[in-house]
Length: 118
Image (cartoon, rainbow, N blue to C red; front, side, top):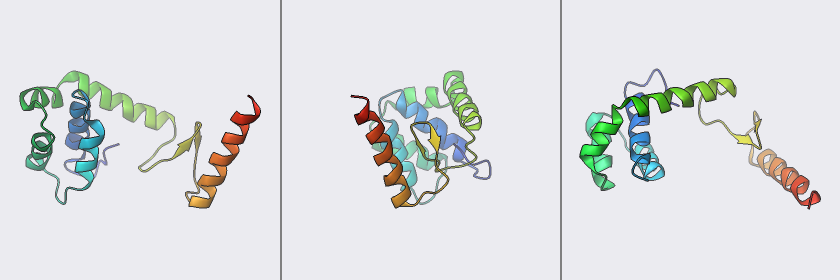
């Protein structure tokens, strides 16, 4: 979910989706978050570092398919009531309290429900 206030957020998001086309979404995602200064050069450098097909990456990052995927992600987020990141859902329930204890308790409760059905 690219922040509107961040100049290169949308490009970075499209870069991650373009990397997904080559099976490297999470690797790209992780590199983005460990990059001190995001810009076009940094985004392309990540693609190079991950040994992506650069010609394909450059084509995909500006493709209507990737733009449509990003638009759908934003619509899905809006429909789910997500206003920013990170947002945590457990079995479709949005978490407002993000303390480790609360998250663990909800997961444990969900697991109990599943186990009682078997």
